[in-house]
Length: 577
Image (cartoon, rainbow, N blue to C red; front, side, top):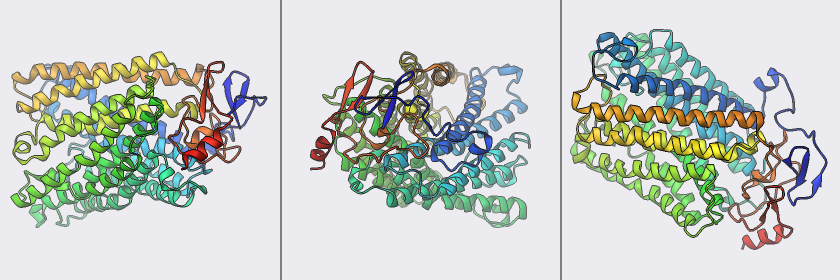
């Protein structure tokens, strides 16, 4: 097995030179657009997903900057001279709807499973691909078609329902709600197919010797997420199909004017969408488990607790949807039950955080770029989780329910945590995906700018919300203007940080130095492959061992890479006991 460490110089995993400067990788295995459009290679599908979700993130982020610029001032003259008249307010409503829908359905939900999961999951079980490669390609095209429906909305009159498509407004609006719900319906199939593939791959394609408790924790997280995708997504798909049917056929399901019940839509929607919260964040929890352990150079603390906490979070996700409806007319008894269940979610979440901190304790921490994002994730996820307790408590939720406090909480848990895990995970597996090393200095600068910008944007919104600033409004009393000034400034800083990240990645692909097979000294099986991997992932069967036992690797400063120790197999055998 070989690894490229310097231009024209290859070594195997124990550092012996090998001459193979023109080896085949999944990038050059076959060329031409058709070889990509019809590929069954999970790695190429991951790259296509990466391009797609980054494009979606750019669109959703652009809408966010437009919103923050409009909210910069409460005067009559704002961004582009739109003012705060009916036209500007209508534009604002459409901008925050597109921002929310694109970010949730096209970026946050698919980002980590579709990109990092597709790239890494088969290799972490030593397989050449996922269980159903054709289904994998179909899931990408479902995502692409669903995304095109959302893009069509932009030229079909826009969308002003909010990303939740709440009835009866989504039924009565004159904007392109039908195209939007059909787009989300199709995107749901992409999520389901990916989940089916991941479950089948983890169950059926593990090599001999890799039991459930030798799986990397990323696979536990992706597996738990897949269960949610398979069980919960059909509920949303059917609900959105009913909305489309009601708009087209005029049947009375949710419209009270036709004998329907709009609160029924909320039950259906949140029965999916609260589990979907964990579709968004659970994969990120798995990514962070990998990063924290590797860059602390310590075995992950409490492996089984972290693994089972992923399953516990998935289970709790199905029974707490009612906390979104505390103000929708539920009985006080039902509210109290949902409040108690919601607070219980904090237990498995806290298990992960405390185990990460215990892993870092007395570890040989390396503050490389992925680790900075991992530590930033812990900060954001903890703040998001603690503020969630205020929203789970009935007395405080009544006050906070429709305020910026909810906006800040949602962004800390869903957007910030998922974004930091996604960027950190890409930095971590970037050498494996592209065979190039990024610029570490600019990686660290970008991480700090993104961290500062994100907290500047959203932490102030907790204060604004606690003082009564309502969400989803284009206008606001002058007393809230200072909060919007700070939040908008933070959004600009965050944007600068994200562009630093993007340019670092582009520079890496064009001019980055060739990556070694295992730049981090990790022990999960994907790092036993070349960088980038060959078409079939491995030249020789990878060795199964404890993914968090780092004693089998040693750092070689001459080639700036980790290499396998001569006694690797003996060390791994001891680790099995």
